[in-house]
Image (cartoon, rainbow, N blue to C red; front, side):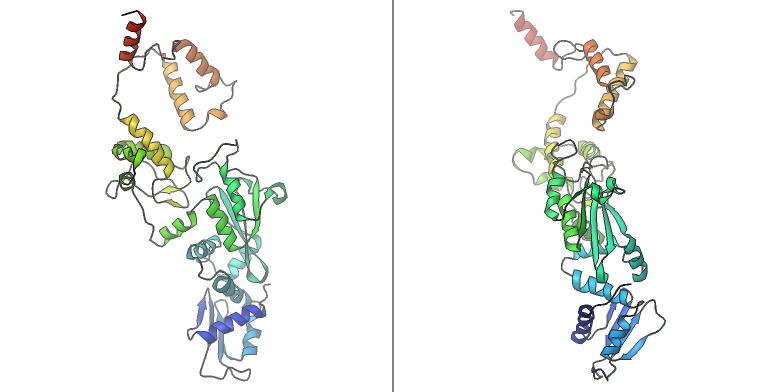
Length: 388
């Protein structure tokens, strides 16, 4: 049972007295007739809830308070108090996300309260957010890594300050710095067990900066997307060269960087407004509204590489060796090299297989099949070495 406290009823009555419009929220209807004496002997209040067949009219203040405390009415009142007073309109993005966390637009108050008592879950990137029902209709939120969904809280490192999420998000499970906070490499083994709504959203914003705001802006139809061409045009200094990156290379770049395996955001930017990229944009819960700094930095390198002219090289490889080179590239690109066991010599990207290929096909200068990368330079060096 959820009890209504005097503080909550006082707030509801004060709202009715200060605003001529009735309260209509999540199935709760409450009104005050200002033309009737509002004393206990009056009868100026009306109270109705969606799950009741009875509309309570001409209530005195004391009768209003009594009806509001009924088991089937109280959840509607405490629900109104939580959303309109505790959460309020201070931060529309936060409010929208917290409503989303309990599917407020999809379920009635009684159904939500029943579900909240056992916990309602949503995933946000690699994070699991659990909303529960606290005292007097207040909500509490737990945040943990989705991989720890079934772990006991006592077995996880416990945090309470949203700013502690900075340390969690800084390094991956191998101790390497994470330059992209939305990369799918967030460490597990931690929990924020008891947060209010404000701290819950702040924690998510530390783990995934601006994700809640951008999600809600997109939901409202107000997401401001900056496409690649506009982003490239405004770059200056050493990054000014990225404007020269060919459109087809931008597609390859998006395929390399902006897919689910590399980033949890869902890419919404294209080459420009009239030129969509072929690369898949991903399926993340929150959108990517513009190319990030990591993509721009990588584009600088790719712009220089794409400016090189092609050369024709001739290599001698067996069919299995060709397939092995392809397997090595795939394993590195997919980040699977750590998964390939040393004893698994049937895997093309196996370390010993790669060392065997290097011993067989690379010359002492590291050239594949003895073929220099820049034959013209190689020839000049050879002439110089011969004394010509």
